[in-house]
Image 1 (tube, rainbow, N blue to C red):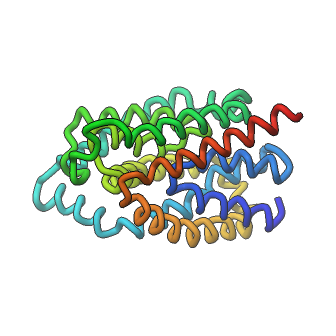
Image 2: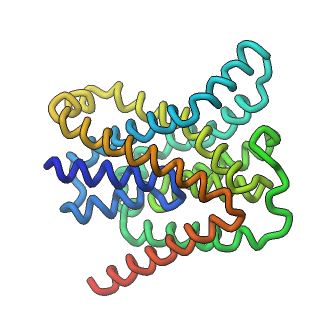
Length: 267
């Protein structure tokens, strides 16, 4: 892999991780533009989210600290327990099906990415038209049943093109959260998942060997992802204060799905 390939992959990860347009789908597209899938890309993409994970932890450091204080000082477990409940379905299905989805060509195909882009995009366009949206002010008002619904939606994000943030924000909206609150909860609930994915990858001797032999490219991509991701998360949360924000991401997804479909038809 060349340095400019690492740069573009880091840029793509940083731009798309925190907006509901599917970072995995965009990274698959970027791989094809850079010459196609390879074992080199596979190992590289296992760790490219370290930069965006660090950006997320730094952005929510005060909120994370308050959650820890709630647990260990005030003995209030409601929000922390909800986050655990939300994470459980993705962890279970990820362990059971993660390797199958990663290795099966069907799930990484442009056709699948386009289909998931379009389906989730259409739902984003329609969600704000539903009645009784946005009754809950923030994520602390979620109950355990609603937290589980959001967790079940997160399972869909195992398929490239779906978007973890997109599916969880949609589910958050459907259970009554406003856009900004749904985004905050989505990002907080993603931190344990992302930490687990990184830790699992780091335990692999093959992955460790790859990092050592490609340390410069690894650092470059993650530095780019960190800087761009830090800017993207601030922009996304500011934009998501709008009650109709999701529909704009939805239209982008539908437009991208149409472009992919045209590309496939012309091949």
